[in-house]
Image 1: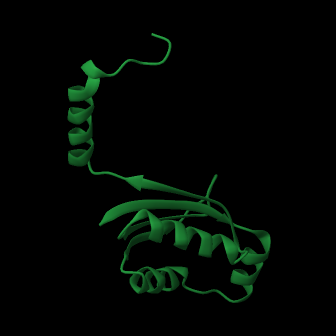
Image 2 (image 1 turned 60 degrees about the vertical axis):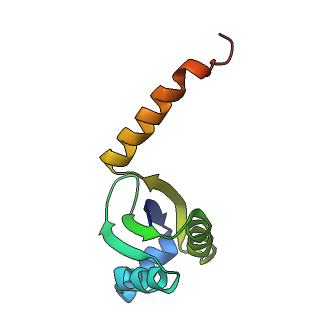
Length: 110
């Protein structure tokens, strides 16, 4: 399965609601990822540009997009950003493949 990193913010209404009635968002996310055949690996509350970061495994990009749409449609999350994550070993294989293709590729305008 592919690993993905999700980052985003809660809007003011969501923050007010969670202050009034704290809830474990990690448990909610773990349940929804399991339902689609994925797995929540880590969930963090952060401060700065984002309010949360979580890392999860998902079967495919279609599933990730569906979950991103679901999270945004709920109305409590804004600025949701999702990125596919690669291990160092996977990245090294990509660099090797790019190197093998380098001789057959011409950059635009060159």
